[in-house]
Image 1 (cartoon, rainbow, N blue to C red):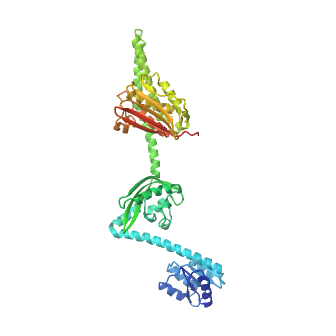
Image 2 (image 1 turned 180 degrees about the vertical axis):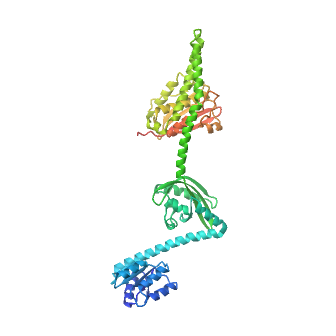
Amino acid sequence: MDKILIVDDEEDIRIALKRVLSREGYQIELAESAAEAIRRISSGETFSVAISDILMSGMSGIDFTKFIAEKNINLPVILITGNPNLSSAESAIRYHAFEYISKPVDRTQILSVVKRAVEVKNQKDSDLEKLMLSEKLERALRTQNLDLNRQNAAILNATSDAVITIDSKLTIVSANKASFEMFRFHTPLDLIGQSVKLLFPENKIQKYMGQVSKVLSEEENKSALQLSDVTLLRSDLSTFLADIAICSYSLDGDTYYTGVIRDVTQKKIMVEQLIHSERRAFLSVVAASIGHEINNSLTAIQGFVEMASRENADTMLKDRALKVTLNQTEKLRALTSNLLQLGKSLKSNTEQSKILNLNKEISSVLQVFKETAKLKYCQIKREDSSEDIPIRMNPDQFALLLSNILLNAADATNNIGTIEILSYQDQKNSHLIVTDDGDGMSPETLDKIYEPYFTTKELGKGTGLGMFVVKQIVDNFEIRLEIESVAGKGSKFHFIFPKAIES
């Protein structure tokens, strides 16, 4: 029950105020003078609100208010006076009186003011209690190992990472200086004592609280969790990306959880810039490195054409020159297509994408390869289908994607194996599966399959760019690629296309 102290040298006023306030459930204490009120407060009595007349014999209500302000006591003082004037009002403001009321006192007004004063008093007490609790926890930690805690305190205040501790009720109980700067809180009470949900955007609360609950459910002192690219919320409602490491520990029978939060926004920007720079440098290296491949093909073509052009060239030599020219031309076409793909951006590819019929695009690619030396002697198994299977892609990119897979399959089967092509659509996705009965790949080869320049082919028969280009295309168009391969038994490439939606 809230206890109110009424200070007035007129008994009738004291009794009248007591009657009004006691009917509202307040416990009322009376004092005949400001001196008596000060004595009782100094002896340790506590009150929720004090109501004091200004003009009294001896000490005035202003003197009483000044005492409360100078002693920094959390006690709202409501001053009442029958002779309101500018001087007393200024004094009331100077010494932080809660309210200044003129007599006669209106019942509704005094009840409203008292109610607000009690609420303010209770809120300040609660805030102070939270702050004291945080300080108590910090003192307990320091007591365990004073020297270590001094070092930890120095580290925590020096680090740019936010270090925040919560209890088992998900209440924030402590935070280092960087926490307030990172989350842009102006005072410790804005953060300490609040729920950890305060740090999460509304649309992420359910997801992140589930991950936090995972830590809370683990065995004490063994649970740890690493969270990457977590979206966190600042006090000004802006967001940022962070990496978080969370661990738990037990202290005085209670369990606490400390998270180290690192803002990675600038890191992400730098990584993107680094990738862009490395990509441009890589393209330059690629162009230079495959130059000798192109030159070799042109030299072979030129040599055999010159021999076939001689007057004494026989039919066998001319046929051989034609075959070499066709083979080297196909090799140059594949190299050129892959090289051009490396220079294309994600934006240029996706801007030219449209809804395609997967079956029709497969047929178009197979028609081009029908008479090439690479696939001429391979057995292609594919059931012709008039079914319309939609995919959203750039047609040139799809042709390059399937061409690289078919050429690799032909090489894996020494150009005489079986290649099976299957296409179908389910409720969510469109699918393309290419299977061969060639040499297959070991786990070690599968781990390196997307690396540029990596190839298992003989020198001069491959540049190691085919699967690198395939990886770039599937990433650009958000295609999922699943590869199954066993050395000596062949390989299976399963492309899963996202649902095609009209733009």
